[in-house]
Amino acid sequence: MAIRKATFAETQRILQHSLHVWKEASVGYVQPSWEKAFQLAASFLQGGGYYLLYVEGPVIQGWIAIGEMRDFYIDEAAGFIQELYVLPPYRSRGVAEKLCTEAFRQLKAKDYRKVQLNVFAGNRAKQLYEKLGFYEVCTTMERNLENEKD
Image (cartoon, rainbow, N blue to C red; front, side):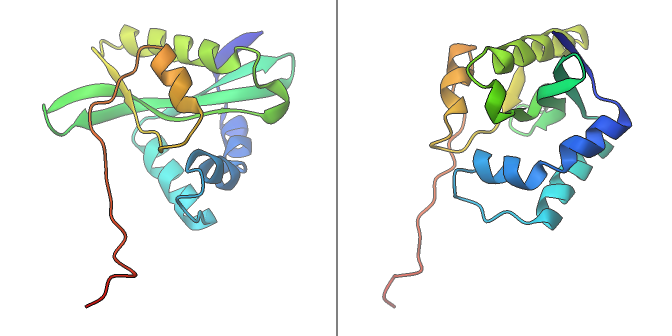
């Protein structure tokens, strides 16, 4: 087992999964498109973000995308997890937790005091994040107005 930074070619392979990853992560809330998935990834990567891979030999089992974000409310830079994904055959083996632990180590080495992420309600990964010490800071709420009578 090794965790390491993805090469350019490996990053391109990961991006081929973007549509599926986004669809799974948003638990049906978002109707993903290739255009939006690539816009999100391109913005993140152009901002200095990168992927860490969990590999066994030549096989990529999962990845985590880490970078920086600016906490708008307190005007402070924070480490940010853009994406965490483990390919289905390798789930329930501790891969996600190991990727997060390495991400925390790297972000702390860059002097970030905290790490943040966004997770959709209903995403099973939220339980893992809570186990790893994440807690809710802000909740986005919405109300559907499509069926409202005028």
